[in-house]
Amino acid sequence: MSDKDLNWKFAEEFVVESEELAAARQHSLELGIEPVSPAVGAQLAVIAAATAASTIIEIGTGVGVSGLWMFAGAPEAILTSIDVELDYQQSARQAFISAGIPANRARLIAGRALDVLPRMNESSYDIVLVDADPQFVIEYVEHGLRLARKGGTVLLAHALWRGRVADPAQRDETVVNYRTVLQESAKSPAVLSALSPVGDGLLQLTKVSD
Image (tube, rainbow, N blue to C red; front, top):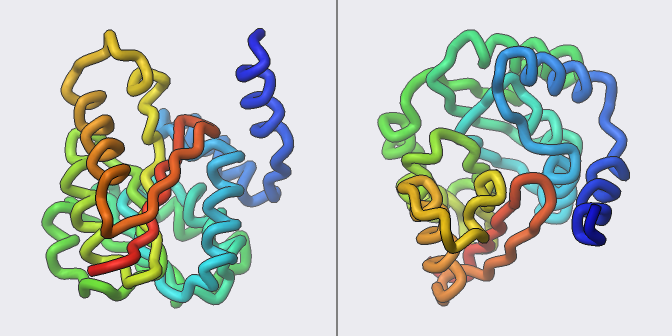
């Protein structure tokens, strides 16, 4: 195992998840949903706490793993989460309740994100997390930047897409979409960008201008 692999493994194992998070992660894996890794989740919590986030919108609910992590950092926040799978959202709601999160702090919207996002208020969210269908990643990030307030942060999970983005030999549509987001955000004066290699990659875009 290379030094980089050892560092990645250590970073993941360094994180201690709560009982509720561990249960949600296990449920996610049983359903075949790929949740954010523990190290990515910990970064979500830190960013939520550092931002003092009060409004969060999430594209891709899953069964609540990422939502639980963001609530860990911002327990007083209101989370709006969009997913096409109603059954997953019901599991997420139960996970939030088990973690002691009041029901009125989680607004779960069942529907296609591309239909729902245009109805959301622009410049209204402290954090926008994108963790949904990779074929629409460009559109999701564009919507995220519209919805984030100045000083807010758009977070893109799985930004390295299973280790394929860094491999120049990989040129399928999904990989190209992620590379496009990374390249465009890196040179945009409207955001400060950082790419973390933990988990499957986490792109962080803090909006500095409209």
